[in-house]
Amino acid sequence: MAPPIFRTLISLSLNRSTRLQKPTISSYYLSVAFFSSSTPAPSIDFADHFIKEHKFSPEVALKAASYLNYLKKPDKCDEILSFFKKSGFSVSQIEEAVKRKPTLLSGSLDKTIKPKFKVFKELGFSPHDIADLVSTDPWFLTRSTDDRIKPSVSILKDLLGSNAGVVRLLKTTSWFLRSNLEKSMVPNIEFLVSCGIGLPQIVKYVFTFPRFFLHKPENIKHFVKRADEMGFNRKSNLFLAAIRTLSSMSEETWEHKLNLLWKLGFSEDDIGAAFRRAPQAFAVSERKIKEVTECLLSSKRIDMSFIIRHPEVFIYSVEQRLKPRLMVIEVLESKDLLWKEPRFSTLFKISAKQFQEKYVLPYLTELQKASVDTVGL
Image (tube, rainbow, N blue to C red; front, side):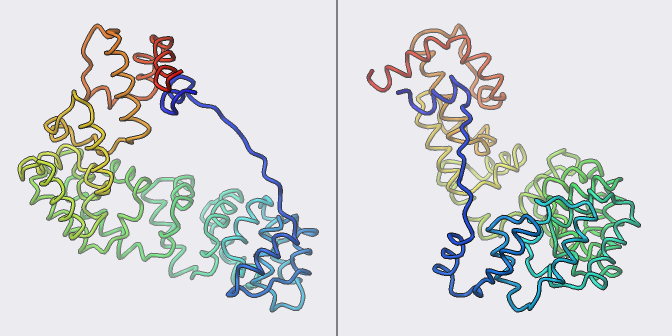
C-alpha cells in the first residue's frame, strides 16, 4: 500500500461520504440527560412539537426544548417561527438560528424581532439577506436598533459599497454589530489612510481580518509605531500586513518568537529583513516555526541560510506542501529524471496544480513505482 503522501499526489483526492444515522429523540434525550447535569431537563412534549410542527431535527428540537421548558405552551414559539417562515427563512436557516440562540423563541415578536426586520428592509436588505444574517447571528435581534444596528450598518455600507458586501462581512463575523464602529473602526481606518495605506487594500483586509479594525485606536497607533521601528516602509504593500501581524499577538509572544529565531541562527538584521520580506510568517506559532525548520533541514539540499533568506516558508503547510514536494523531488533526482536543478524557493511557492503538472504527472509511472518500493512491496 502506498504512503499517504504519494497517494495524495498521484490520485489527487478521493471523496468518500459517510452517511450518518439520524439520532432519534429518545437516544438523543438519553445522552443529554446522562452527560449533562447543568442543562435543564428538556421537555419531550416541546421537542416532539418542534419536530412534528416545524420539521426540526431531534438535536435542535431537544436543545430548544431544554431552554424553553419554563414555558407552559409553545404558542409564542409558534408565532415567532411562523413569522420567520413567512419572512422567507428555510428550515435549515431557522434551525441554525435556534441552535445558536434557543431563547430567541421566547422573545417579543412585536417589540424585539419585527423592528429589527423593519430596519434592515428600510436599509435595502432583501428577505434572503435578512435570513442569512439572522441564521448567522441571531443575537443582533436583541440589540438596540437606533444606537447600534442602524449606525453600524450605515458605516459598513458606506465602506463596502453595497448591502451584499455588508451581508458577506457580517456572515464572517458579527462583531461589527456588537461594537461601536464610530469609536473604533472609523478612526482606525482614517488613521491607516493617513499612513498611506490605500482604501482598496483596507477593504480587502476588512473581509480577511475583520477584528483587526475593532482594536482601540490607541492600539492601532502603537502597532504602526512598532512597524516603523522595525524599519518598515509605509509605502510598502506589506505595511498593513506588518501592522496586522503585530496586532495578532502579545509583545511577550513576539519576544518568544524572536528568541526562537535567534536560537535557530537568525541575527537581529536577519529578523528585521525577514519581517519586512514576509511579515505574515511571524504570525505562525513557535511550534510551526520549529516543524518547518526541522522538515527543511532534513533535506540535504537545504540549509539554514535558505530559511533565513526565505522566511515565507514558515507559512506553508509541512504535511500538505513542504514534505510531499521534497519527497517527490528526491525521488526524481535519485532516478536522474530532472534535466535542471529546481529552485526550492519557486518549488514551494507554485500552486499545487502547477507542481503536479510539472513534477508529478510527467513522471507518474516512476513515482508509483517509488511508492511501492517505499513500503517494501
